[in-house]
Amino acid sequence: MTGPWAWFAKFLLRSVLPIGGLALLAGFSHGPAWGWAIAALGWLLLVFMHRRQWAALAAWLDSVESTERCQFPQAGGVWGEVLGKLAQRQNDQARRLEEVETRLGSFTGAMDAVPDGLVILDAGHRIQWSNRAAGAHLGIRLPRDDGVIIEHLVRTPGFAEYLANADSSSPFVLQVPAARTRVYTIRVVPLGDANKLVVSLDVTDARRVESMRSTFVANVSHELRTPLTVVSGFLEYFNDEGAVDAEQRKQFARLMSDQTARMLTLVDDLLTLSRLEAEDAPASEEDVDMADLLAQLRAEGQSLSDGRHRLEVICQGPALHGNRKELHSAFGNLVSNAIRYTPAGGEIRIEWAASDGCGVFSVCDSGVGVAAEHLPRLTERFYRVDRGRSRGTGGTGLGLAIVKHILLRHQANLSIESEVGAGSTFRAAFPDWRLSPGK
Image 1 (cartoon, rainbow, N blue to C red):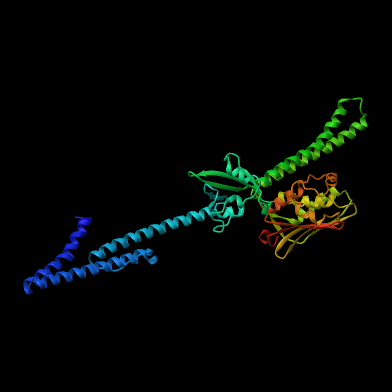
Image 2: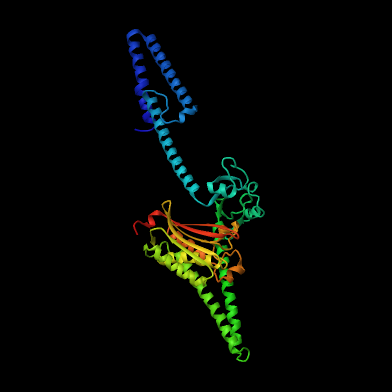
């Protein structure tokens, strides 16, 4: 037997029957008066005990501390069983509540780790919850902004209208006034019957990459258009045999050859740069004899200079572990730049030495120099300090970008020092573990 009937049976056996038995025994022994007195006293005590237990139970239910696990009044008998079951149920509920809070904490932590901003709004666009990224994107701070209408925080023109008539297929572009360098896209997703989920995505880097891609395509097109225009124009003269004489034909042919070589050089540099960006590390490495490499750089530099500059080569360091072809390309670009931007009669020093545990390759010239504001951008593709002068020297605008990528693949750092009219110094510092002792 279970339920209320079982509780009633226990109540009869443990409370009513003992009192009735004592009353009957007293009545037979000392007369009916004693029997009724014992019965009345027993019932009074029973009522008092139950009243006390009721009061303890009511106080426990009303108390704030009663929500803590196992904090329940002690009692015996039927009341002990009742209170024990209540306490067990309270413990079970507290345990389930802890599990829910733990899961909620894990969920909140996961949502805070999401790079996208997430904001839950009610039907009146009041903020119910947001993650950490939403604070960075939209300036929302909880609990300060709990219940605040989001349009009061995000005052970008057009945002309120988009929120009222949101189209999930077309995002709203938001540029926060406090951080105009960052660009975000906003999407609104229905959440339940009336709530909305606002998702913000930082697209600054994507926009920057797209801008760089467009700029790169425009630069390549511009660089190729000039020589193609020259070649195309001269070809028109070749089609008309009477338009030019033999000497002019030779001159035009030489100019077309120069422009074709320039296009080939540009394409080669583009392919080299593309390969360097696609690969994480050189295909093969070896111990490069730096004395031999510097001698080769000197011979190439003298050929390019054609006796117009004084070249000095100093090799005081060990062999360098790396890809010889890539190192030759990087160092050759630095030497050719120094020759191109140094007037006739200038000096160029090429040096390799061990300094402070690093291997340092440097090219120092007495050329025209570069203003300080241009130095941070010199390694950008197609960046030119003076476009007219750069094209006059035959450069493609990709040399220093190639140098940067090759040095990164060899864990080296490039530093540039320059002063207008006083020359420039380019230094590539390699880590000590790339130096080969005794070689």
